[in-house]
Length: 166
Length: 430
Image 1: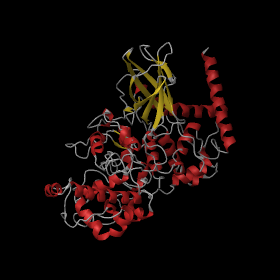
Image 2 (image 1 turned 135 degrees about the vertical axis):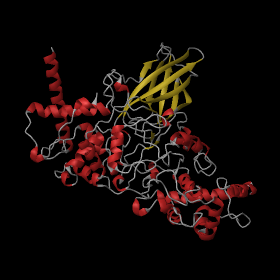
Image 3 (image 1 turned 90 degrees about the vertical axis):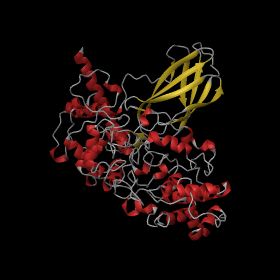
Image 4 (image 1 turned 30 degrees about the vertical axis):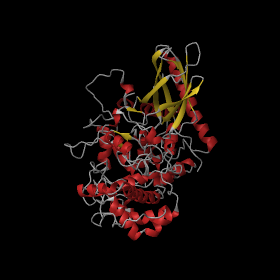
């Protein structure tokens, strides 16, 4: 992951571009990929499941953006679904939201919050925004009078937009 | 066994490259054109294409400004913008620091109005895309931003009461056509403001609540007209846009548009330079606030930036939720969901857009860095912040790796030659 070990990938102007062997032709893009990965991509082992049990298994939480794809830098909403481990909807939960980019050392650009309970253990999470591509964490803390507090962290990778036809 | 894994790895890589070739062929894109430098990998290709100006959507509507699309408001705003009578010494207009001949900025390290400011004048083209205005985002709309400097003691140095008299004297018919009748100002003092000098504040307190409200409304409406004008200011396509257009069309001669050095700089910008992390999208800004350890202009008075601005914008009488806003409260989502307790905002400033950047030294929020060469060097050196914590990191060659490095921002490691290429690329953005 360290840049200092990846070295420079040579870029050759046409006239001095050497003839690559077949293997080397593949190796150069491969190196470039490795170099890019060091900067731009999240760890390979990242669990991207958007439905997960909370840390102490008190709840199972599923989150889903209300519209996809998620545009960079646009406020948008998610639906949060909270259930018991047995699958029964959890009502009247207090849900706190936090998050950020672990690879960049900053938090969420906004302070999203659950603004409404939608019924059947579903909640509206408003004010979400991702200001850049890459790996974002969405951390929820769920609290109910019945089962108490528990926490869960989701990973979401935001990709570059699909180009608009000019 | 190891050999077999290696074989699989090479085979997978070959498939990946073959896929890139066929994807390129299918869409008519020349990802690996052997005759030029444009051997862009799919990730790089997506990244560079995201910078094109033609990918910029229309600026979002500002629900707090009902006249922003009015031709009459745009025209009134254009005149107010250039009117130096709107200052305490009749010598400072918006255009003094936002000079149309200089990308609407002033080439100075800090603004020079009736006095000397503490921060760099920001270029205002494309400001309709910013949810937060100023380096610290202490304003939540272009019109609310516009009324800030008018009453700032070192910028225009004036007061809203005096401005209301100016509107009545010089812009009466234009104002009335847009905003309705002007209240009678005849019995009111010449100078008064809740934000002005002690004398102006006393005069303001002596006015009745209705008069104060009337005058503040005229003041807000001036801001709305100025914002309507400012929102018409748009970027023209740059050399980079022409190059990317040629690349996207598979044109075989994009190298006549950018030099090999500039192309390599672009590759570094979207790759190991990590610039695109914050300088993203067609305006090359994420419109957010980051502490990157830029040294304060005055080390005795470090600037808290965004952290100090959040309470200001929440309390601002001219914000989206205030009485002079035309928005419904539920339309003020940026303000409703503002991050109020983010420790990363200490010493954080807005990511500036980079279009035209090479034409407007000096750099950073208080003109602390004179050249782009030194700006790039700053990001490589990544010094610790004077206030708060820098998001950047630097190499610690003396420390042994702990295995947890991936959890923090990777240092930006660029050779001297690469730094020069990056600077050369920044010259393609106009």
